Length: 172
Image 1: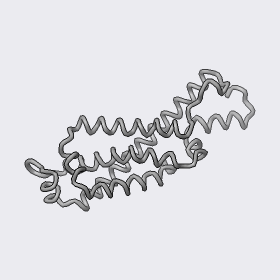
Image 2: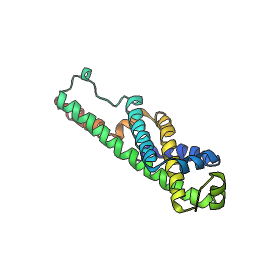
Image 3: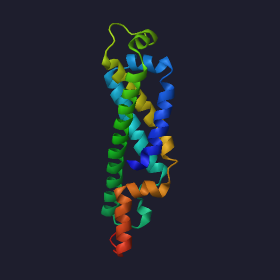
Image 4: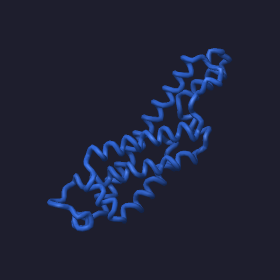
């Protein structure tokens, strides 16, 4: 997770900038919870896939490893990245929720988002949710700018592979 500090900073800055446009406010009001959940799932999945592809983390048959070990490395890499990106997403959501509660007055939200009915904290949750999802997608691009060796070090598959290579074990 510490490898994503720069990515979180860039994503948060992007989201804070997007917060000044009422389009985000309107979208957060208009999108249903199921669409927001789908957007979250897509954003997390895209970031995981993007990191794997941009940093060549997928073990291929050409590497000469046993099939079961290659599958284990790939599974470990995917699970590590999924957990890291979900943590990243939750951190972003919390940052955006604090930002939205602090900076967006309920009256402004009601007016600019064409809110029907009463304003509630749920409106802030929706706004933080959509900001976290959209900036996770943009954060994937920032993740590709990270040092490839550092990204490989945070994935279990590469650390374990390196241990095998250092020990001289031919099973890797």
